[in-house]
Image 1 (cartoon, rainbow, N blue to C red):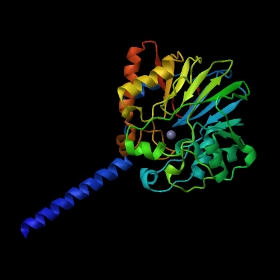
Image 2 (image 1 turned 180 degrees about the horizontal axis):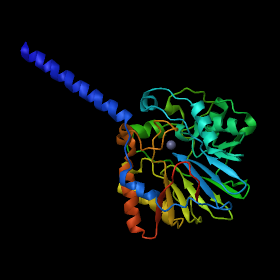
Image 3 (image 1 turned 90 degrees about the horizontal axis):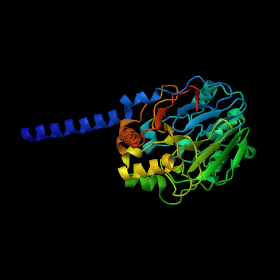
Image 4 (image 1 turned 120 degrees about the vertical axis):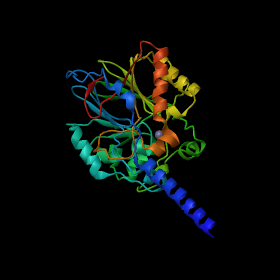
Length: 339
Ligand SMILES: [Zn+2]
C-alpha cells in the first residue's frame, strides 16, 4: 500500500513537471544572443532620396523613397502560442491600428503580400482599410480580403512575373516555393493538400485555414538600387535566372531545422545566383507576444518544434565563411535604415 502511494506521488510529480515545462516552453522566448552583432553596421541616417526600409517583424517592411511608400504583408497581430497551435485566431484590430499609427505613414501606395499564411496575409485587409491603400496578392490573399469585407476596388490580384509600377518602384512578383518544413507533420499541415483559399475567409479560424496560396519573391527595381525580398526560406530552380541585385532581404524562418544541404542550396539560389553581396535577415522573430513589445525570438516550444533559430543563424555564419565579401545584417525594428 505504501509503495503504491509513493508510486502515485511520483507519477503526479512527473506529470506536474512535464506540464510546467510545457507551460514554460509555450510562454518564454529564445534569445538571439551573440547574433545581435548583426545589428551593427546598418545605415540609420538615410537621406530623403535613399530607399528606406523599416522592419517591423516577420516580413512586414515599409519601403519608401521620397515620394512613394509600400508595405509588405502588414502583419501586426501576435498570438499566444497555444492559440496558434490549437485555437482560433483573428486580426487584432487595436494592435494593428497602434502599429500603423506608430509607423506614421502619410500615404501608403500599396500593400504587397508575399503569401497567404496568417503570419503574412491576415492583417493586410485591415491595414488597407485603415490606410486606404490597395492590397496586392494571390487569389488566396484576395479571399482573405473579401472575408474581412475589404472593398473590392482595394483588392488586387497580381500575376507571376507581371511588373507593377508604384512611383519609381517597379515591383515584380516571381512565383517561388515556400520553405519546406523539416517536421513531416507540420509539412503536411502547412503545405499539404490544396494550398488555396477558394472562398472568402472569415476569421476567427484555425491558423491552418490561412492556406499558402503560392509563395512569391518580390524583385524591387528603382533608380536608387534594386533588391530582392525572399520572405519564405524556399526557392524555385531557375526562377531568378537573369536577375542581378546587390541586396537581398532574406527570410530565415525555420531554416535551422533543415539539412546543411538544403541550407546551402538556399544560399546558392538566393545569394550566389543573383550575385548579392549584402543580405538582411528577416522572419526569425516570434509570432507570439505583442507587437507593442520589442521584437524577440520565437517561443521556445515553436522554436524546438519548427524554428531552430540559432541553428539558422549558424548556417548563415557558415555561408559567410564561404563568402568573405558577403555582408550580413539584422534590421532594427521600426527604425528607417538606408537599404
Ligand atoms: Zn508561410
